[in-house]
Image 1 (spheres, rainbow, N blue to C red):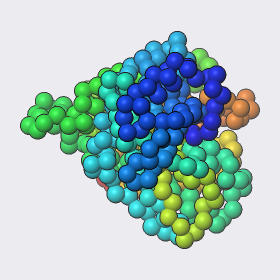
Image 2: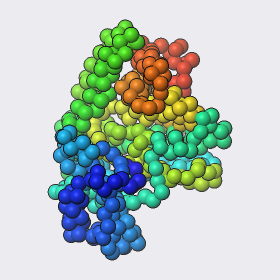
Image 3: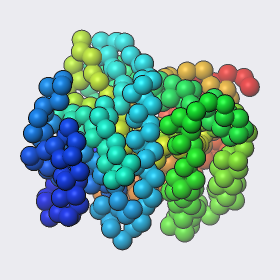
Image 4: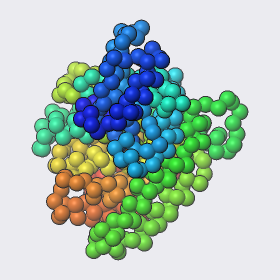
Amino acid sequence: MSLQKMPPQDTSDQIRQQVSAWLNTTPYATYLLEPLAGGQANFTYRARLINPLDDGTTEVVVKHGEPYMARHPANAVTVNRCDVEGEILSELSMNPIPVVQPGNTAYTVRTATAYAYDVETKTLVLEYLPNIVDLKTYSLNHFPSPTPEYLRQPAHGLGKALAMYVVKFHDMTREIVQESLKQNRTQQLSGFNRVIDSSNDMQRLKHWINFDWMMDRVDQFPGILSEAEDTLRLVKNMALKELSGPPADLTLIHGDYYPQNILLEDARLESTTTRPLYVMDWENCQVGVPSLDHGGMLGEMYVLWKYKHIDTGLWMLQGYAEGLGPQTEDATWRVALQVGVHLLSFGTLASGWGTTEEVEDMARLARDVIVKAWTRDRTWFDKSDFACLFAGATQD
């Protein structure tokens, strides 16, 4: 969610009127509802409140979902996604994940505060965060190439904090998922349980954009990928089997854990400051394997380095790898594999980022990462930019 204004004509006036009418029945009655630029799926607004909240808040963000994509109305999408985000934010407000990454530039990580969610209208009222930007945009605007050395530590710490946060989220929800999948629910149905029950649609979408897109790249780059097609198919089949595999391997994942969904203040990284990082857009939260979150974030960080030669991308990646903490060898190889999948499925789509030759180079690299991770070629990885992934690997 990016808090830049977008042209009013891009937003349905009818939807805005409906949202405003609902808000006016709540403590969040508004005298001005401005459309915000942001994701593809939802109608998102900045609301100025008629009456300040008890804590003095005068502005909130309002996020409304319909059974189609706001930017692409012809594309249907389940409204369960709205309920999922409402449930997750409610659970995390009651059980926040404590992450403080110390250092000259320290970080805290949290969600934006959710004030209210209405199941009937699929409308979420969130904390308004002024002067913020997503991490991908921030990196392009604030991290030059080559990146000054003084940014190495802040970038490393930022990556580490993001890994620590999502690892704690996975750990928090793993037991709940395991008990749920064993049909061993002894407690009242929690928000997390309701997310587990509605995972199927989002699991299909997540698999499609990762592993079906990966297979589509064979036709796009036949000269580069044909020889690896059999391995790619094995990877796709493995990913399908994971979802019906032993519950111990499954947890709740964010599902869209990318720099685009991390917000921070649009200001230089200064030392001796504590910088909050906000994890947004939980709609795709689902039962899955942790590597799906890790591979996406690591892959996006690497894209900054590969296409834009921004050293900070590599430094954030190295920090993220450290933040994962001790991992079994199996888990480490699965993360490495998912980085390759992300680079192939998404990294080759970086429109306007690279020349034809650079995109083909990305396809070659992604192929090598996938094949070498599948065959567990540690020698290759130790000489690569991804050697840091194995620093915390333990023997299974």
